[in-house]
Image 1 (tube, helix red, strand yellow):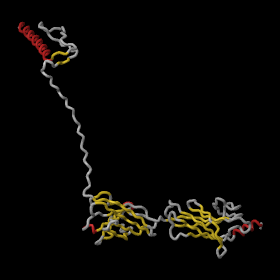
Image 2 (cartoon, rainbow, N blue to C red):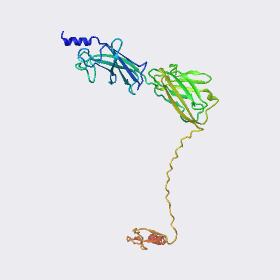
Image 3 (cartoon, helix red, strand yellow):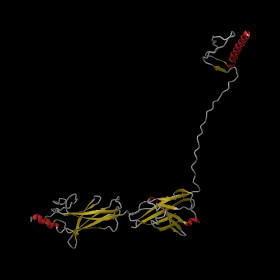
Image 4 (cartoon, helix red, strand yellow):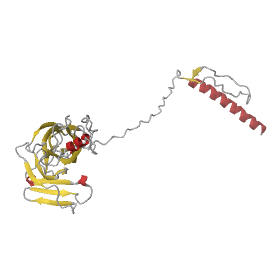
Length: 352
């Protein structure tokens, strides 16, 4: 066997690899994960020298180059390093891969060192492990009613459900939590009887709790309704009030949502629009005074007046581009017409 081949086998044969983290059950975004890797390979290649390398590759592509720490009681090398989970890390299962490589040793397993050990051709041994990420609090959820201005002095508190990768353990609901007189109830489960559209989970002397819309396939319309029965004898006063709901998940995380509302005597109705009236412009007739000073301008009108000799084809330009006294002109025209008509009748009777 060639000496180089012998050295390669000798350097590779005792390799082992194990890894651990300080994650208890779940990791959260922004958590710092501490890795500890144990391997039979030493800090350097025992035959040809050169530093061995160990790193962790996260499933998002981030790399954590580990540092040699020490030897344990079994003379295995210990490598350590840390990594901060990004704030946008999604809930659920994630994997990481430990990679180890040694100078002058090639394997059929590809590694991904930015700067691989000499003559390793970026190969070595690997080990994959998984962990679970859970956002530290449940998802945001909506408080539906009451909100804004209301005349209801005995309100039922209605809210949507929260979600969480570990499941919601319970809800706590409080009304006027920042006042001397307040109301609170807790240990409300995340779900009740999903076969009914409205299920009364609790109805005692203090509070009534109902689950609504759990019987359909749309989880977005699921509601929980809470009514404090003390309001029957002590309605809320006018003014500002507030309520809150705390959702708690199974891993101990919680999220709180709050809502303010104001009780008023009455809510002004929207004014009815007044139709716009269209004014009709009236024609105004201005009476003409019977004064002799009143004038009428006929412009270039040339009336035809019959003479006392009967109907004449000759035009008499009585008025042309002049103003004249209205009543005096009418009298003159009327007189001429009467005179002409009289002559006409005389001629008719003459032939008879």
